[in-house]
Length: 321
Image (spheres, rainbow, N blue to C red):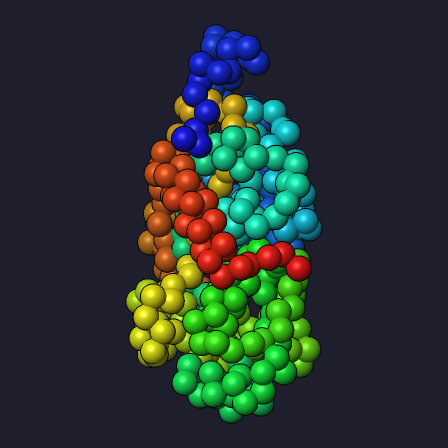
């Protein structure tokens, strides 16, 4: 169970101190630490959340980008911060992947964090530059088989869902591509557009604007079903790879000893702020599927992914470069 029982906290703050802290929260500005650089989907969501919940909570909500270490720099900072609900961590599902593929993390993902809420999901897309002739999975696989190892794909980082999607694609098609990891999704996509690599595996939110401009062509989406914002694009699975599915979720975490009352207050503020139709429309237009969970639901999803990604990583032999 990922949610730390409040009884454990007695030796740290005491039950009465926790109750007082929760009742008085928040009395100071909040910070949301983001594990990726500015410009990517995680950053976009964090800033939207900050904008929407600040007036609800009556305090400024500041966003700080702390990329690096596959997200471990920001994660460690939050894990070691005071459990007062004033420091939150904006993560993607790579938070769960890192726990099973990275060695020597300075924190325990299952022990040191309290899941607060998931806010959205987005499928990934496999896209190519116009110089690549392939227009679907069959043509792309044929090209990869004709030129084994010659093409490179960029991902948002080692141990990211994008790398997982790429390595799973290689395994299921018996093909080979060179993985080029970045410290964030924005730069990974920028370099594909700049000609550094011909293949991008990135979020739909990041890729779609460039598809509309004719700068990229989508081979397929990685979700189980087609997405509402681009219903004409088939999934990878329906193009001959049944069982292929990798989505990415986005969520907020807090230090493990944060009172549940505070976590529930954050969740309530996020639910209120992001449930406005204008906000929902903005998220959908950018390729996100809004989906706000309670702290307990978020904890269950994280636990399931720690198990799922662990098994999948062992099956495909995923290793961090």
